[in-house]
Length: 497
Image 1 (cartoon, rainbow, N blue to C red):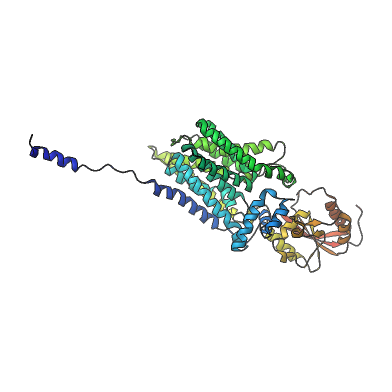
Image 2 (cartoon, rainbow, N blue to C red):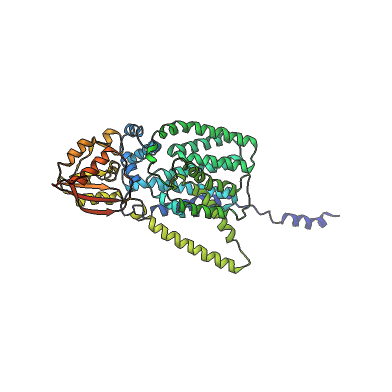
């Protein structure tokens, strides 16, 4: 065969189209991370001031973060040791950016946005970019997440750390390396030091690894890391157990029905098939995070009530992953237009419910109390020189955020202020001295809990109530969110007990 006869074949081979290259995963990864983060920040900034109000737990953060680090540490020896690290962090934040409602809540907004990015990455690694994007977008829409995104407490930070620890865990299973396990252990330990119940996520991770059937070296590495986390947490757990009276207010599980409703939806979504993209399947990771921390707290509550929904806020990571995978499954093109219509109607209904919930969560009434309103009421009903009484003394924290509210009133029970005594609510006088001081006043403004609130059995509290009952009469009561402010006037004809 001549050269000329072979030429067309050579030309045809050269002219063949090159193989199509797979698109780079970097753009998809960026969208999966940034879109959920931006949505979380937008939702977090929406109504973040809640009409310039603050509730009791935030008031504690606000006041303790104003103290020196040494004072925070001394206070933690008596009370709130479990939150000491968060107070120290917020002290530094206030020092850098000044104190105020925005500064108090913005760290939670940023932390929750970081958590949303981690949820997106988890979905991407476990089930692909579409599931990752959907899960990341579902996460900031969840009511509990919206609530604590705008809360000046540690729970959003804990959620972010657990989310990223979970991502590092999944990545560590795929590529076993000591550095990854070190990062995983440090992240989980930091979450636990911010709030002890983050350790329950560690249990969920262990179950995931066992069910996934990962190699023994991976299980061994996780076991060593988990042991290190528990060892690092143990001093805090032992010392804080001595302050267990702080959670004595928990007599029944707090907001359990709402949490269970979200968990049931998430677990139901686990029935939808999800394609596996690695050794760990999405449902096997997500279901333990949703179920186990809640279940373990409920079991512990059989001995001592401990369940509060915010303590296991990070369970929403699993809920978002499961719901995102479910939405992706039903979003795929179907032959039946009827199913598409039903899915569309359901989606609109859910979005409407979320919008209404979001509006409610941005009102002062969405919290159990409103210390801003309580303080303003005390200032309104009180007169210069009136006595001020807290029933019980722990309510003193409600008016401490704005000292101007009580500036012209005299605190009848206070022997030593909270800062100098390194306490949250100060030290009160002995019962006889307190009763004698009350009798020096013709008008007393009393700050009380809502009707039916539990009052501690304490001689000081009994002295307050008995003196009011025998020597004063109720002049008027103002009901505010989570409290009552009552004016008592002196009755110069003492009544019998």
